[in-house]
Length: 82
Image 1: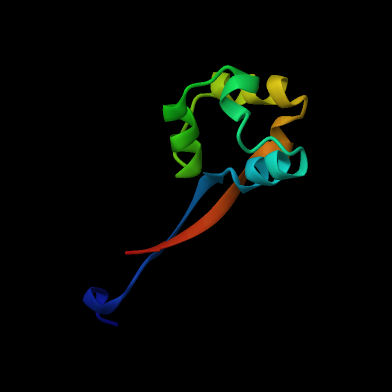
Image 2: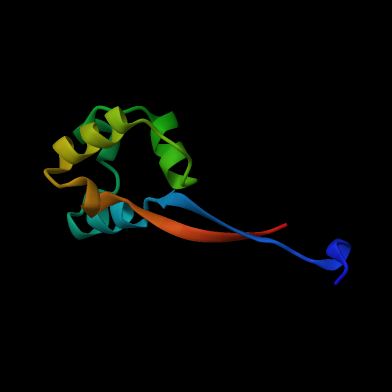
C-alpha cells in the first residue's frame, strides 16, 4: 500500500457555546449578558466564535446567570483529515 495516498483521520474536540445562547433566549437576556455577568463585549464576541476563553469568564457567566458550566457549554468532536 502506498503511504502517499493514505489519509489520516485526527479526532479533536472544541468548545461550543450554543447552550449559552439558548439559556439567554430562554431567560430573555440576549441583550443583557454583558451587564448581568460583568463581562466585556470582546469576550462575548469570542464566545460567539466558539473561541477559547478563560475558565474565569465561564464562571462569571455561570454566577451571573445562576447556572452550571454544563448549562452553557459543551465539548464537540471534530474530525480533521490530514
